[in-house]
Image (cartoon, rainbow, N blue to C red; front, side):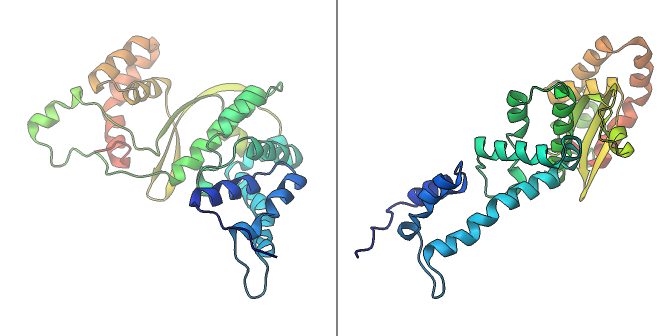
Length: 267
């Protein structure tokens, strides 16, 4: 029996393998598995299809285990069965485009936003966003950090007109629930609303989750949106409640020092 012609382009192999990995059911997967001889070679002990089966049967469990590791608290809240069902739906709808499992949940917040419409929607979407921020803070890039060391006196004097860029691993978040308190309690029930502001970032290999004031969150948000330091301070003063103005005036230098100490700004 003549052997089928091999694929001419690498993209043909990639397209076939992608369809195989994300086949919606066993029948569809078998259809793509039957083409294994066209794309793979046999070994001395296994046929091309047998070699492929070793990988394919392990792919979905690896993806589900990775998502469970990234979202342990969402898993606890939804329950094992519902969590797995949602993650399978996600993987079927949003196939991974990266070689790394780190980026597997990239589309998960949008997927839940578009598809999760239960009564606890606000809590679930917030918890998912919280855990994804924590996960990303642990692995995204660290760039050279900004420091005032080596700046001339004139450059130091002009810091107010500088636009500060935050490290990719820094997340400035506002949540309608105190997820840290909920996690510490270890309950599976939804907690009451309690707005919190968090700064999530990485120092060396450790992820830090710091509660910040509303006015500090507002200041950092303006900076992240591209305002100069002077403009961000002005806007924060205008939007801050009167009782927060004292904190802004007395803590600003501390916030600046800590930002440089932890290296949350890019040079």
